[in-house]
Length: 306
Image 1 (spheres, rainbow, N blue to C red):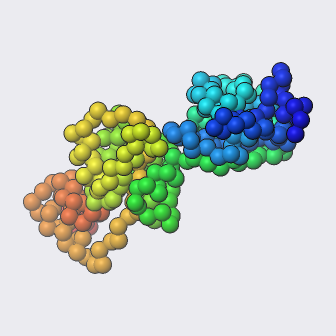
Image 2 (image 1 turned 120 degrees about the vertical axis):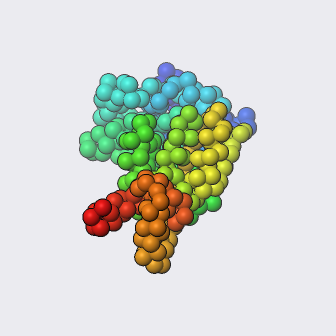
Image 3 (image 1 turned 90 degrees about the vertical axis):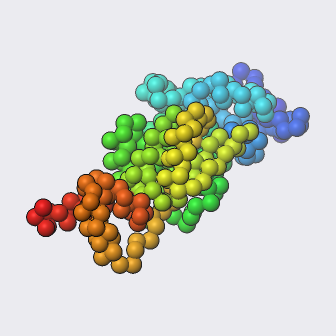
């Protein structure tokens, strides 16, 4: 391969370096390339991703400073172009114009796989609607890394992104997943993880298995496993949490064989407790969601005319 084939705009060399060995990258066909990048450890990148980053005519990213660290690590001279939620309306059309001109466009997020909880979805959708080719370059993914490290069932899983910040909205959102027959994955900020675990224990059930996966692939990577109630108690006492978090919650536990037992437990507790306290205690005993038991108890009292 000669220098003309590997030269990019402004005379830059299309290529990357591995262990001080220069490797040329061929120019890419015109398309939108969605390139997964490391979620922490810069060694977690594929050769195909490096060649794509080096060979693309245009490289779009969330934060040019973050992407520059990765490019410098591998000796890639491509100059990143900012595309994020605050400039998507302006930058998106410019990237589509590049595709229309027959140029290759690579898109990366700050970490992990593009389009997962970032504005890249809008660009990909627009490119598809305009008839341009969209090419995924797979690699690191925080939800998948958390799932396989959590020790929870992975035959069926549901990624739900970030939960709402406000408590009521958060609980309403969690309630939508109470009966979902799958392991649940959420992104969460460190300063909200305690409140989220408390809400999840209340809505999904205190004995449901879960794992708080923090700082994945980084030096202080941590998997803290237990029931939702146990994890909620831990983070209530340890509020000074740092780092990026993926919360993984196991699927619903099997219901008791005899639903009449649950009714009997509720009826017995209701004789000496308020409706709210009876539902909470029944949730602790049965492992069923408190909200569901609370509603069931209200229905029982309405039927009895109380």
